[in-house]
Image (cartoon, rainbow, N blue to C red):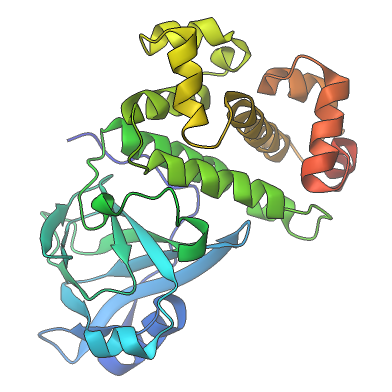
Length: 314
């Protein structure tokens, strides 16, 4: 089995909780759940980080069963989908009458408005399950999101899982840079969620759309390629290629700009803080932009500040 890619942020050290204290901690981060275990205590950790207004929980827990009943659902406002990514050990999930075994790198989407059952048993030497739960506001996915994905395992090596993971890895490098800056992130958050919704959509040519997004995220060189390159890659005519985006209400140009901006932010974040500020132009070209004036205008329109101001602030 291929190991799951490393998550940039280390999870906090686990500690021993009483079941009541654990449930309270879990509720403060994920909502109302009840934990059942053979002992009167449980080892684990729960932490939360918000990126571009999107909450990402990190949950480490020993052998146990965590249940969200109908009563728990009624206690919460149930406004989120949970995109759950298994990082270590195993988890059995029962949701929407589907039983799923998650292994490292696998994903599943859970609807917080529905009952769910999570069983953590450990595997081999891995006794502590490690999960990331991305809390995605329901209102931000409605309209494009395919409910067929709810409760359905997304295998680690699938194009869909890789596409989602690459975006999350990129986003996770940003918080320390964005904190305290003057960036307005609402528009960029919208681009991220629109792309995510379309990755999970049930439109025609879905595999082709995912392949294009994954290719752009993975290969810097391809971000400057012509449309013909991607049409050939997806075995599509130019007309069919553009239809892939038209039916999703997102243009190929918008997608390219979003991924290039994401890459620019990553490059800015990766630059050494104890060295002179890096060249905005050099990083923009490295991110795939070919016209620095257009890049400056796009960045200012998207984030409300100039790229130079961000580079100086980092």
